[in-house]
Length: 238
Image 1 (tube, rainbow, N blue to C red):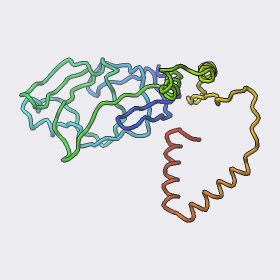
Image 2: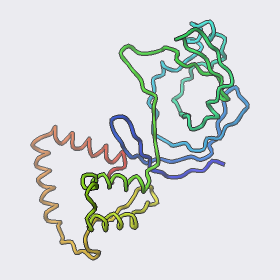
Image 3: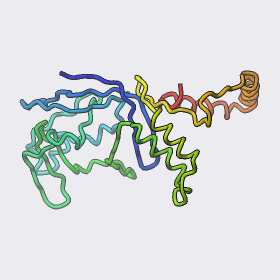
Image 4: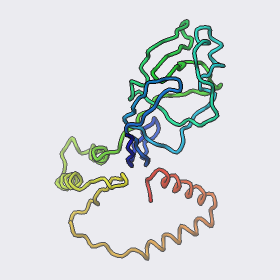
């Protein structure tokens, strides 16, 4: 039975790291269109859309250009969106049970429990280079602690101060994950009982100053709004 859970994913690429809210489906069952074997996917993470280029999907039209591929029972390209990506963490779904080879540097066919696929079919757009390496991981308490410890790297060769030790100890004891998947950390105050003055007047004054800046500079207003929308969409702000 497929189960559904709310999650926060940490997605790392070459240029950035971001956290996104999503749902995780456990034990999702899939089967090839012309196959009998049913495969269980341990963890599947949801996303609003899967970016892709339809012309890069191999079809019988592509295969007919190669003598060793033209007889493969490939499915025609359907007028539907890509609904799921299956990665190498599910080795059973990608296990080769047949290969249609050609000459060196030619594309080849691979038969898996989900059906036939073509590797290296050569359908590329001029000037476009693709990278197919992707790594994601669940955001954990250990991830947050490692990030926080980066601030202490410059003094680690010496030693932690007592304040540093107390802060990290308190962090380890108090950090926890909220039901919606976010991680909640304590503020690094020296004392437990801290009285904070009411700063509403200062906040309103800064807000009014920001409003005037928006009115004077529409371009700044637009870019500011776009950045806030990105933070909200990625779950970095509420």
